Image 1: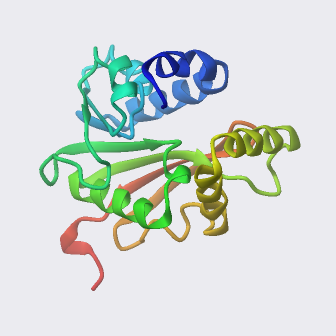
Image 2: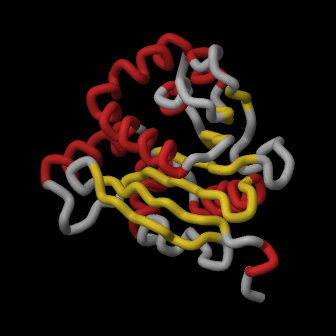
Length: 205
């Protein structure tokens, strides 16, 4: 975000749109019963707030100091998602929510590889992001495209490239993760996907 005052308004502005999505995401995470969760590109830490009354050890990383000032009451750290400063096999579950579409494809791959590295064997990766297709409601399609266009030229270009690359289809390597479930949400404008990590010893050569 551009500055601290805008970051403070971020969740207020997006709350009506994201509240139900974050509730659903939290319910699914609780059902998976992880002992530890990392939110990659956590922003203001709002998704972690929906899990704070559980026994899950919660961690977040984000590159934006402005966002992290809002998330200061959570265990959120300023780190580059392309080079996360946690050891291998540190977390039972990693989530990436509405962050991949705004990155270049090369950066997306680096983030996914880092997620694989820090997730424990047989742990989970949960991704929530836009997936605009023929079944998306016209109003949702229009609003999302408008928001992404207003976010800036580079942001919009990455958003379009993300869909050109079939969202996560070309991004998630089946040698790293196995898709367990895919749920369309938000007027079928987003997909919530649950992957399990393929342990290194079972990866195909």
